[in-house]
Amino acid sequence: MNRLIFNSLLAISGFLLLVSASSCQSTSGNPMAAPVQSLPVITINNLPATTYQEFSATLEGSQNVEIRPQVEGYIDKILVDEGAYVQKGTVLFRINDRIYREQLNNAKAVLAAAKANLANAEINVSKLAPLVKENIVSDVQLRAAQSLYDAAKANVAQAEAGVQNASINLGYTVISAPSEGYVGRIPFKTGSLVGLMTTEPLTVLSSVNNIRAYFSFSEKDFLEFKEKFEGGSIEEKIKQMPEVELVLADGSVYPQKGKVEIVSGQFDNSKGTISFRASFPNANGLLRSGNSGRIRIPDAAPAVLVVPKEATFELQDKVFVFTVGKNNTVLSKPVIVANATSNYYLLKSGLEPGEKIVYSGLDRLKDGAAIQPQPMTIDSLLKVHPL
Image 1 (cartoon, rainbow, N blue to C red):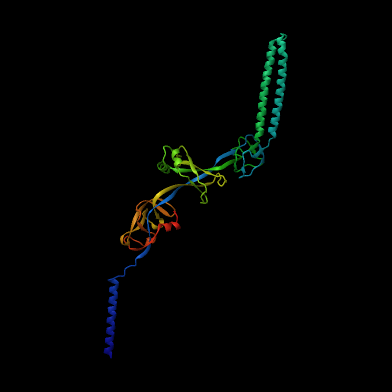
Image 2: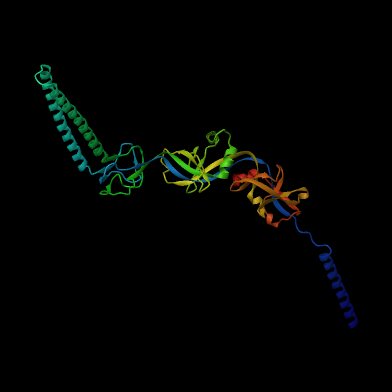
């Protein structure tokens, strides 16, 4: 009985040793192959694309007029409110005019006296002329009377000028809008003393039917601009520029496009920039002087290789993709980026039309790895993430 048990235990031990050896051989001699990854793959082709250069801009009305007093006095009335739109000729301010009315009355009195003296001198000349002719009095008296007449006539002209000047000063007490536009900030109140020596204007009147956006090119941007557009002069090159867009402070795009008009004559040495100006129609008055924004200049390319940013990775400041080659093996490849949108790179070199690249799952790949491609089209991607 004991011998039977011993033989049974020996048989079981041998079986376990065989199983263990078989398991070790399977693990060490024939390791299980890693599963092939199934990854999305897209084919790269040339596509039309538009990119944009953006520049910070400040906005000004086409006409900003400082409203200043031409005579000294206290402000009697402020007849407009800040931000109001006014037509040409609208009365904005009234300055106390009592002094200037009295000056006008005094000038008129001086004119009346001068006219009376002129009339008296004219009478004397009229009386003496026939007497001289009859040799009753000397012609010296007539010449003296004529001189008095001429002086009286000059006094009348001077008095008339005085009346005119007093009328102008009185008119300056009513300050009207020289053009249509929006009233700016009014730093003065009723009762404020203002005059020719007041440093701050009463307000600024902005005409904003057309708004001007001022922005600057760096020296590099300016050189690229000169190379990019045709023309024998800067003015001719500006005419070749496309219409530009205005991105407002909230990120929205102003609905009407503008046109670049002029460039300043020289660089600002302190900043290394040169100023440009673009003009935008603003009939509805949506834009105001003092607003800020960004000028966006489009750059349309009829055919360029487009690569999704998600299909790339960076290594040592270079951009790479994983191309799919023979036997569905992948190989990392550097690409040169010419431009970019929010979701795509526009390539200068590195790939050829028709090449296939892995779209996602790049962190699990290495050169030479085999994958199971899951084809996807760039068109379907563009529907989700447009250029």
